[in-house]
Length: 403
Image (cartoon, rainbow, N blue to C red; front, side):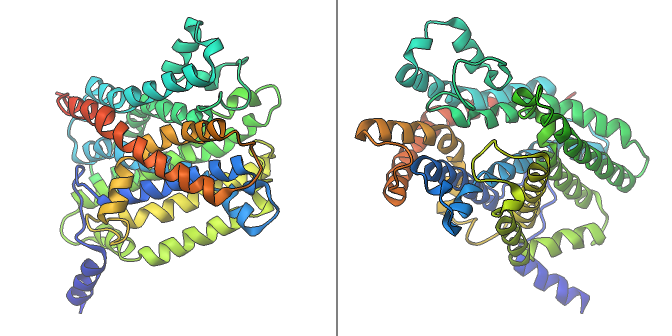
């Protein structure tokens, strides 16, 4: 009977993949869903729908939950080689190669968008070398007295999240070193349990850090430091530890069975994620106007977004098959170009409004959404194949493992 149950579970979830380099198309599909959520939020905010006192307004105003999904995926995929090395007792990733690959993956396409946005929307500031330096180096969130309003100038206001991502890339090797030092043990299972505890500690510190965000004198800068978002990155790192643990387990042990059970329970997990999203679309998480919240509303929103991200991604984290829907060719393709979708969609919205002479918050959500989606996907496809892919392939030549 146990063997029959195991076979049924494998048919539902696909074969368990405990390898650190296994490709999972469904994760690309989930990345596409996250990108769509962010795009929907920005279109809804620009057209004014997100500020209407309606169910639609509330639902669209929480599209930034997609950011939590992006961050969790980064924690899962980038920490996995370190987690595998920790449990197997092998050398971790080559530090120089890792940093170079991250730079090649992120910066070239980003630089193209920054150049276009500054020249088109903010030409009066392009004579300043500091403007180019701070934007090319992803430093704007740390400027105490910027020349723009809000989180960024026209066409670039979403880039604060990329700056947080870059900070995570830079601090991940340090975090991995701390986890390894505090998880030392002879038994791989003991190392895995200790690593999960340490990462849980980072997650708790992230919530504690929220207190500093709401000190008035610190708020302008404290809100974009990476520590605030460990609660979204670290659960992904914990999923990576569990995957590595399953890979070192002998036979069909409890960790493998747990992974297979979660992978076979995608529907249940996504219902939980959906319920958490509905709760987040209430006044419990603050007003729909971004940035006007309190400690407790930010606390509940941060925690609920973490729940959404964990239950959205976990069923796809350990199976090469994943969801038939999210793993299909269209979602997987949209996931692969999702980085360029993220980079370009705000620029496209701004160009559309300037070209047609539209005023913000005057409605037309569905028409604007249709045009923005079509144009953004077209531009993102070009950006992906013309800019992202050549540099990504160049990065594959760099060393991956430390000697």
